[in-house]
Image 1 (tube, rainbow, N blue to C red):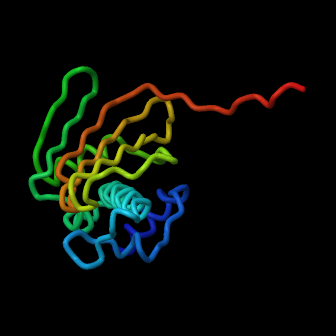
Image 2: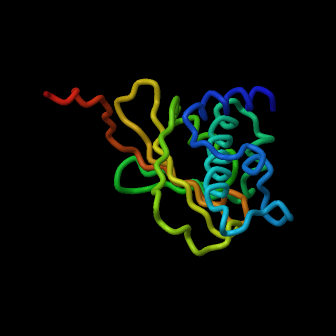
Length: 169
């Protein structure tokens, strides 16, 4: 588990700031579940959970994957316009390893009211997973119910990133 923690740290260097104690202690079905007023904590908790699943899968740490996923997790891969769906944690681990992400990107809107759904209901997190080669990426969608990952979808995508030139004066 220590190796997974190191990998999680490496993958979460750019994670959004959130109170570490509330995020780390977030659990569904316990008194630690947050209220609707603390939606930033819920977002951060499920982002951290998604990154932990990726890091643990890459490290071969099935204990972390088991803790955060349903045994019947559905894993769907869309390399083009048709998808292939498999069931179970081994399929999840295999697909994450196949995408071989080195970095991730996460974007969340601000200024909008928080969603009107319970924090331990259905939660969706979407990440862009970028491999070391950076010539393409994968759009990964994690769907949680009652705090466990029940559905994971990956769509291959073209990827390009760069810096804008400084403004001319």
